[in-house]
Each structure stands twice: as C-alpha cells, then as structure tokens.
Image (tube, rainbow over all chains, first blue to last red; front, side):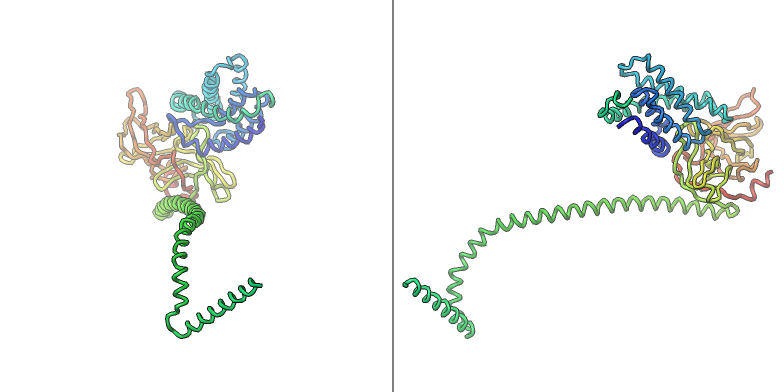
Length: 165
Length: 275
C-alpha cells in the first residue's frame, strides 16, 4: 500500500459520504470522510505526498456538491496546507493531536466553505449555520476520527511511512 | 489318491443334494433339505445380522452425515435466497406504494406533466441542501423546474447533466419560494434555514399568522405552481419595531429521507394566472 492507493479510496469515500453517511446524523451533522482521510494522510505522510489524495477527494466532492465547482478542492487543499504547517510545530507524539487537528481543520474547512458560498452569491446565515451546522460537524468529526484512525492504522501498519515518502 | 476320491465323492454328493433339492421342490411338499439347511444357517444369519447392525448403522450414519450436510447447505442457500427475495419484494412493495401515490397525484392534477425520478445521492456537505436525482436533460429536465412528492414541494432543479440533475431543496438557505398562509391568505417568502428547517419572511405585520397554519405556494414569480403544500407554521416571531413578521415553518415532507421525487416538466394554469 502506498499513498497513491489512498486516491481511489478517498474518491470512493466521497461517494459513500454522499450516499451512506449523509443519513448518519449526529446533532444534524454527518461525518466528513473526505476531510478526515485527507487530514489523516497529511499527518501520516506530510503535505507533498498527500497532494494527489487531497485533489482526488476534493474533485469528487466538487462533482457531487451543489456548490460552485472547485469549492471543495480549494477548501480541502487550504485546510491541509494549514494542518501540515501546524503539524511541523505540534507535539506529534501526543495522542490528542489528531483530534485537535481534525477539530480545527473542520472548523476552518466549514468557514472557508461559507466564505466561498457568500462570495458566489449564495445566502449564508452565518450565526444559525455556525451553531446548527459547523459546530455539530466539528463534534461529529472528532467522534468519528478515532474510529477512522484505528482502521487506517491497522491498514498502514504493513508499510512504514518512510517507505512511501 | 485318497484325497482325489474324497473330492469326487463330495462333488457327487453335492450334485446329488442339488438334484434332490430340485426334485423335492418340484413335488410341492415341504423340502426337508431346505429345512435342514435353514435350521443350521438361520441362527448364524441372525447372529451375523446382529453383529453387522452397528457397522451398518455407523456406515449409514457417515452417509447420512454427508447427505445432511449437503441438505443443510442447500437449505441455508435457499433460506438466504428467500430472505433476499423477501427484502426485494418489500422494496418493490414500498416502491409500488410510492409510485401508486404519485400516479394518483398525477391523475389529480392533469394540467401538470411530471417525471418520476429516484434520489441517488445527497450533498456531501451539510451546509448545502441538495439532492442528486437519476434524470437529466435526456429526459427533458431543465434548470429551475420544480421538484415535488405526492405530498408537498421539495425544491427545484439547479444543475442538469445528461442523465442526472441536482435539486436545490427548499431547506437550502439560498432557496426562496413565494408562499401564502392558506387560512388568512397572508403572503411571504419561505426560505431555507439550517438543519432542515424553513422560515417564512416578509409577512406584513397586519396579517394574521398562527401556529398550525398551512403554508402553500402562491405561484407568484411563476417559478412554482400555485397551491402546492410547503409545510405548517410552528411558531411566529413578531416585534413592534419590525416591518414584517417571521414564521418558523416545518416542511411537510421529511426531506432527509426522500427516495423518490417527481420533476414538474410543465405546469400551465396556476403560475401564469398570477403573473
């Protein structure tokens, strides 16, 4: 398994996100598989090797969403760049770091989405959307991330990260 | 030499015995030779039979075990097949029910040309309320066409591909539908609100609106036909300093669980009257 095998997986995850996990609602939000996988890849392999994965996930979301094309790709890429920058200063050995990373990544990702939607002329109700959509999304991803990481770690255990970068 | 004679005598005796057996059988009387042989052989047969029974049971048990296993596999397979069939039949029944309701609705409003479509996906981001349906421009769908169920308005087509389309739900914050309160005819604009809710804005302060009032499309603007059910008023917010009232509306259909919808290809009368 290498980082490029994650590209089709993340594209498939976007489809799952659109069809299956969209029915799983925790306080009105659904787990954002694509964002979680992209962040997990950046934390594991760093930004540069993860770029194909990020783009594959972003483009697939763009195909499925009602937002202007490119919104998802732009947002997920920007968030992954931020995660990668912060990751270089963060205590990587700390167990809470992936959770802190996904919490802040979700927050920034959703705010980026709202900014782009606003700029493209869509109606954005900042207050209600932040309370009813963004905060539940943060909580939902924080709850789902440990499960996803557990599955990914079992899968990634076979190949050390250094062998891929 | 003696042994050679002995063998000869034995053969002659056996042949004589067989001949006698045949002759006695032909007379129709009880055959004493058969009786004598039976007298000797039967107990031996009985004993051997008793001895052989466990062996036979064991061997037949092994055969049965293989047969039972094959039967079990076949029954399990059949059980799985039947269970799948039940699931498929249940799905078909539900689909049939939905289609029947849609057909009834279609017959009730002959001036509308509708196309049934299946929901194949939802927007991956919860900030947006969109559906993906399996019909596109090849089926005659165009942007802005209203989408509904047999019960109420769902949204409108926002993007069209050849074989699929995106539907902006009425609960999306960017959606706006001209509506009226059925009881008082008070008009306003129903807009999407986060978390699958609706709000009716721009209701003049003088108009009467109360919880439980039914909200219908007004047809103003020509984007949607008249008198389509939208939802029911949950609560009303009024303020002396505001020009308009605001009503929170509950959608008439659960938009999160939609499986089939209808795209309104043509609607003549309602909207044009209002324009």
